[in-house]
Amino acid sequence: MVLIPVDEGRPFCIDQRLASYGDYMQFVAAKGDDFSGQPPECSWNQGWGPEEYGPHWGGWYLNGRVYCGPPPAEVPPDQMLGCVDFCDAFAFCSWSGKRLCGLRGADPDKVNMFETGGETEEAENKRREIGLSPNSEWFSVCTQGGKTEFPYGDKYVPGLCWDFSQTYREEGGPFLAHSVNGQDCSGTIPPYDHVYEMIGAAHQWVNICFDSLWCVAYGGSTSDSCERSDAIMEPQSLGVVGVRCCADAVDALGEGL
Figure 1 (cartoon, rainbow, N blue to C red):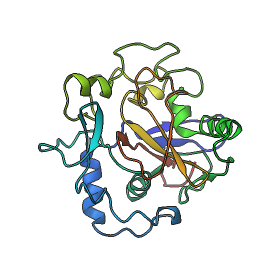
Figure 2 (cartoon, helix red, strand yellow):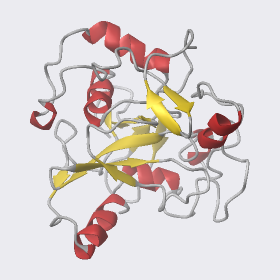
Figure 3 (cartoon, rainbow, N blue to C red):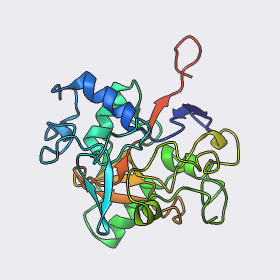
């Protein structure tokens, strides 16, 4: 993880990279059929994957869309995790001794739910204001502390970040958490230069939800700026959605900073 300082309040840590298939498989092996300890909003989640697919830790591109299903071949442990729902991601981060990234200062054991008033334009503006606020851990890291439009600067640079959608269209097959461009697709200002692939890879669930219906995931297309990379989806949604965890910073004695 990378320690992220803040101007006011407590610093936090964020994973250098998205979780991989190997990371998630350790979680699945440890939890098995134990679905306890989830927040009330996740009471519906009685499986670490959609039952109709069975093992599903991968996204497979076919005929113009991504499917969640059993991988067609043995999956490398560094394949980027995809096809997890919001509650899977929440439980995985908790099991890892971390938490789902969200708003600084929020209760990490609860789903951060905000009532914004439905599907009006005013409600949409309010959702964006919350999700893209300086208190959003993911957005803060993606913009290098609010200083840039993209993780690496203010202008889009084609080919700098690995674009999974192009890889699928041209090659098919799995996408890796440790891609060949991973050393380039990072910030340019310390410590953000040690955080990779905030955009261009799988969307990443964050602990920001609205109106008991939708939760936020960031990432997606490599050509989207940090601000334009957000997607608001039902928590049960699957697809090329993975997770990157956060944690509160602690000192060498294990006490909060």
